[in-house]
Length: 236
Image 1 (cartoon, rainbow, N blue to C red):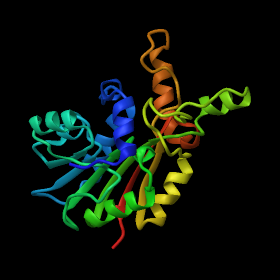
Image 2: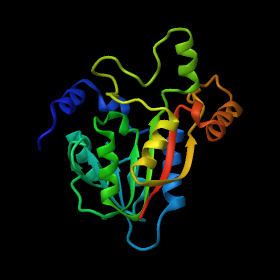
Image 3: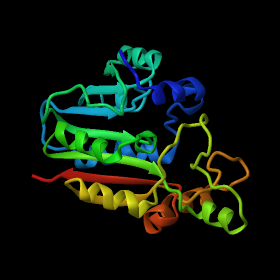
Image 4: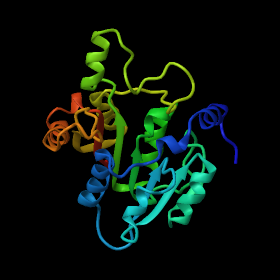
């Protein structure tokens, strides 16, 4: 399989083990909830997880769904296949290796910020989705509350990166920018929400009531949330 020089560079410098899916994170639980809530129809349904890593997220939908994945890291793709996710080891910056109007749902969790041509990426998602198919997408919000405070004091914001390595983020979004781009690419937004206000959610010193407030607060103030989760349907 051929990969672009950019993808190879980020794969070399970023540790995929450091960025594996943690199902305790609120935004991953939100994605699963949105897929189940807005799932089209009954019977055989196909879901594609782009950038699925080892399949931990999308495998939660098996056996109710036929699960597929695309993953740029060879070993992670192998492990996803072992979980029953039919995963292609491919460069996500290129055309998706599936026929048109094949999927009922596409998940793109924390992946669009790694993509060079984001309009082409969304166009490919639209191509492989059936009419009325579902897209559930999440991405970090560069304008989250934490970053607004950091920038006020001249500090460098979370999620942006000025050198190769780290998580490999090459695009940054505000919550409203990603919503507008999805609409411009032929989707109707069904739900637009922040996942949670940025707090150290795993820290023992943060009381449970404050964590619950942070999760709920993302719905009311998506522009301040750490991640934005958008549920959208492909226009006819």
